[in-house]
Amino acid sequence: MGYVEIEVRAKTVDLAVEAAMQELGVESREQLSVEVIQEPVKGFLGIGGQDAVVRVKRRQGRRRSRSRRKGGSKQATAAQSRGNRRREGTKSAKNRPDRRRAKPAPASSKTPKRTERPVSDDRPEADIEEQARVVEDFLTGLVDAYGLEGSVGVTWDDGVILADVGGEQTEALVGARGATMIAIHELTRTVLQRHTREPARLRLDIAGYAQRRRQALTIYAEQLIEQLMAEGGEIMLEPMSASDRKVIHDVAAAHEGVTSYSEGESPGRYVVLSRVAAEDSNSEEE
Image (cartoon, rainbow, N blue to C red; front, side, top):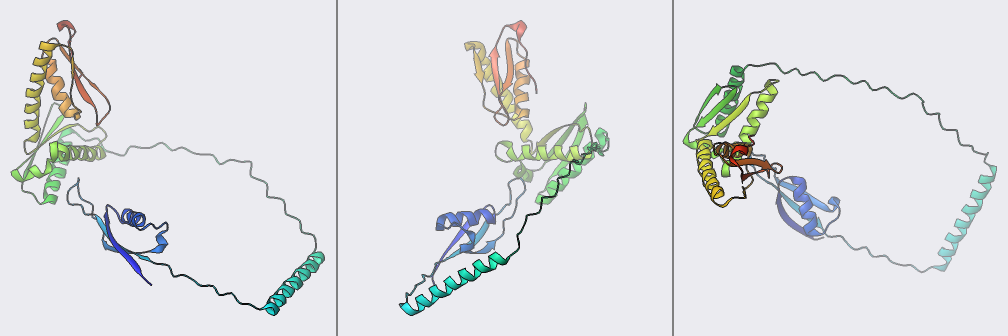
């Protein structure tokens, strides 16, 4: 009996087995022998994850050979016995009493009533100082969980929590074009929402990336507005996050004769800069 063996890597064990089935041309998982070499490990925000690795064997089927036997006397005996069984079955059927099917039980006419209970919000009301402590504790635990050396500073101003994660090693939490930092921002907001009914607005900066990003976007927007004033018309920017779009809107609002607005759905939402009459200029801020 021969075997065909392969190793497959995928996000989960089930996906790895499905890929092996397609590669081996197998329709049923029962035809395979699966050995898990490595269980998948989930990373945090896309960092530190590992795929599952399985070793899959396909057992080659063994052909069965059927031998035909000649024997007229045995075939005749078998046919005679089958005929006797049919006749006996006919006789016994005639002697059986008539069977009647019972009437199905009547269905209940009463339908159960659904009682809707009001959902109570048991989250406490926390002031901005307490919310700032929640943010600081979460971000400090996050930095420690990664084993990074860094500091977490949290302040608040005009109802907005300002969180700053500093340190050279914390740049690992920024990610490509700030993708990881955006994910951490959303995760921190979720933690706030679970601790209080009315969470405050949150601004997060890691390793100074948000500040550098705002400066670069401000220069970029100024250049586009200068081009717009010279050529007229409209300029459509690339899709941006909500915080980046706000920087563009703020820059446009500081210029007369320029308006800005956002179009599209996240994550493909983008800003459009348009030249208008000075008295009609306004910007849509988010």
